View 1 (cartoon, rainbow, N blue to C red):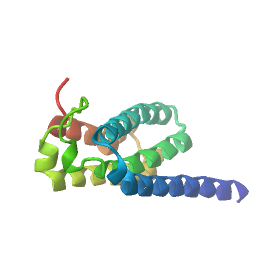
View 2 (view 1 turned 180 degrees about the vertical axis):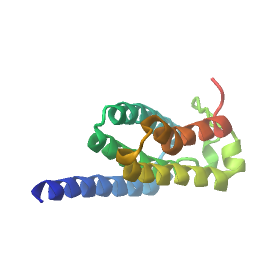
View 3 (view 1 turned 90 degrees about the vertical axis):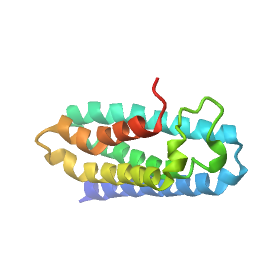
View 4 (view 1 turned 180 degrees about the horizontal axis):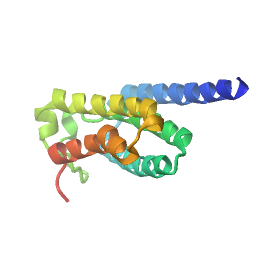
Length: 155
């Protein structure tokens, strides 16, 4: 019982930190420069990518508790990203974001929300998955691919 309490307490801390992060980014966007916003979203996407690779490695080794914490972090990051694409950040500072994001803002936001929701679903299904790789593809990598193919410059 004590172990379960500690486990729940850790998740609550992660969630509270994530909520505070969302509030901070949302409330401070008005004060950030275009460069800071673009660099922030680039850093967050980069962080999610490196975190996704860690999720894959941990899950493949059966270390689901550590992987789940990272999945929750990624989920919250996707929510933050929604607010990091204001109209005045369409170009400059090495952005690789295509103008399609702003032309299809509702679709882009929906994809970020879906990615967030899918990471939350992944937390609840990963341990019971018969096919870890396939489950990660379905709930994590497919969203990365969907965003890159539609909303990011090729490199």
